[in-house]
Image (tube, rainbow, N blue to C red):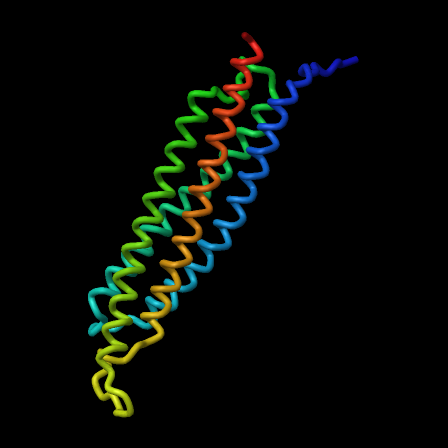
Length: 197
């Protein structure tokens, strides 16, 4: 008869932080996955409407949105990694699958930095796109038919703004998730040091 080896029950604080990592990992994963899908659709529609006479500000907005999408995909991978950390925390300390605190903190700091960088890139792209929209809107004389297509606000302009604004929100979710989990790790570490002394 085979006897399964049972791990000892992890402490309550370890179970709580595991639950927090799992909850925030899945929350960030699904929210950011939905937002990257919406941003990708907006960029697809924007690219379909591009012409040779597209304003350079819109090109900058599209470039920033593509960079933001790439960083968001990396953020989604980090969210999935949080779920794996949650499962590993339920193993006894020192086991192969149990994550090391130093590596977890390093991962959370890197994820925070990448989300913050993605937010800044999307802000730049959104700012350049909005500047183009404002310039086109201000240059339109009221009540006069516009003949020059460069002065008309087109759907491509709006889709680029939509993609970048959505990316700002998605990266904000990633930043908040990483910050909160980093705080929980430090809080757990503080509780452990007090319980030992």
